[in-house]
Amino acid sequence: MFRILSALALACALAAGAAAQEKSKQDGPKVSGGERDAAQKIEKAKGTEAKLQAAAAFVKKYPGSALRAQIADSIAREIDATTDQQAKGSLAQTFLEIFNRPDEAGLVTASLLNSYINTGQTQDAMTLGTQWLGKHPDDVTVMQNLTILASAQAIKGNNAFVQQGRNYGAKAIAQIEADKMPEGFDAARWPEFKQQALVSLYRETGVLAYKAGDNAAALPLLEKAIGLGTADAAVYFLVSDLNNDIYEETAKSAIVASAADKPAATKKAEAALDRVIESYARAIAFTDGKPDFAQANAAFRERLVPYYKYRHQNSTDGMQQLIDKYKKPAQ
Image (cartoon, rainbow, N blue to C red):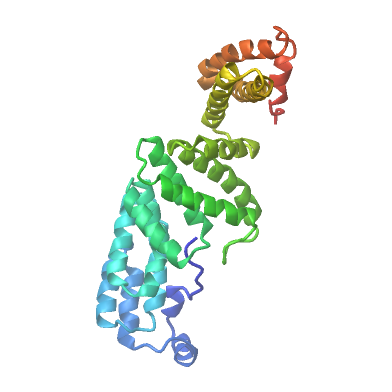
């Protein structure tokens, strides 16, 4: 996601045979026999760490070699394929010590950022991501990852990255909704990516707004996540609570309103209550039949009944139909 590079595979650059070597002299990188031998040692080394050691010796002896870019790209790909996130970060750091030119850092930025994120190095991830976005401002995937990271930290009680996360999330949403595909992005994957990314981004930015105490901003963002089909039950619960908070405030205002203002204040409170009823019905529909949410489902049903009765002449007629309206058809 961080680089779109096209390079010859290292093995091709080192192809054996007199004919291939002759063609290389004419068309390929101009390198000495010593450089080719040293490069072959890198290719034959077992494991990424061993390749890096051999590469360090190569770069020290041949810092300006025409094979340098191909070697760097080949090793960067191996680092990217490393599944152990701790090891991936260590390998990427070693890579940067060896391949220290400005244009080489981008080869392992993705690997290093993923390592930081997956090993809980939030500050390092934010710093690296911010540096990257300074040079690649349209990298919506990085913005999304940093937004998710900031939200995860906020949920854990660390609000240090809330504002950064909100900024990145808002920018990513604006770019995606404007259908501005980043340069080099796989066009075939773009439509699916947009849908999935928006669900995530609205959820994360909504959570971040809530953690910042900005409930007025949080509610429409979370509602948007639900509208796009989020599978996170917590979003349904939070939206229900936020709508209920609004209703309670408007109900209090209606109670103390003057005689002249009371009709309008009452109407406003009733409209807010209708939104709560809809939110509760939607949360119940989402959690129905899910054992993990049985307790929450029962609690929402208990809350819904008196509100529904209040708005429907003390009757629950039609309440189940309202819940069923929000149930997705079986796949």
